[in-house]
Length: 461
Image (tube, rainbow, N blue to C red; front, side, top):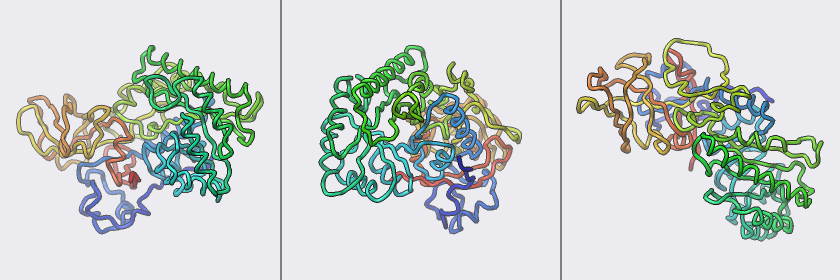
């Protein structure tokens, strides 16, 4: 494992201008690296703003690395969460197999960024992107893995890849779904038929099985976990059947069994980790890969509530109950070691611009700035007008959002004033990053006076 660098994107962002949200006028027409070299205080930045906590990112990557090692699984983290090359590299430096992407366009970005192992967690049926993949397979040693959940998808891949480009076979995983789920063959027999079609294709190599359990449940209760567990058992049975019929292509060096979003990766490890056999002691070499992505920044909403590290198996592997940890961690400077829990690395900052009636404040960030699809922002603290430090702020709740405003219910006797800045916990990193071309990286949100130290740029088209 190589040593991860602390640097993100400030050195390559170049001269900034007023088109980047959150950058103060003092940074306009100045090289971003030069501006941030002095580590300006977070309090000098304008709002609305989303920050990424460097210390939390570092801790989260290391926590997941240790968790996977203890659980006996590998990981191909989902890059769609951040679409940031520097964060992907941190995950790769921590031992990730490669990067997972969700769309053919994201696959093309990963190729441009020189990612050596890429998994497209989807069917690839657009001829233009199939030709792009064919060229990548023909010209280099990049490993590309895609999924198939229909015979028609296999037919399209075979037709396009067999049309004039000499290349290595494209590795394909059979995707098993479930009724009411997302994509994936709905029955064991249908999945076997797809596998047979892949076997018969001269352009494809059957390389394993894949699935996504996250669409089948949305809670961490026993009933939800059992639904996930039953599905994963079925995915394992499909793998067993393909092995029994010697269906896996001999040109595939390591069979892949993959499942696991960011909510139920503990159950994936429980059910599927025994299949991992990297050295082929029990037969064909096999890797079991999670595809979790949100862990790198975590959040103060959906993932905080459902994180596997808050459940029994996670605790047994070195985690603990996250609960509301991080929601009130504003205060004294501290040198905090790597935790056994994930903690949120993303926070919103918004200025109170109106107190039109008792018990109501409106701040200058809304749906175009902060995520809202998995819960509204959580009010965590306040930085009083002109102050540099954040203090806890209780009794305030975000109740609604417009494009550019958030409504905040506050106690009728609250001293909150126009000009004060609220610190917000955010829910769902995937729909946080895609609202920003560049996010300010701070050293550690738990410090009395956090400083801006870098920038993360995003690529969402």
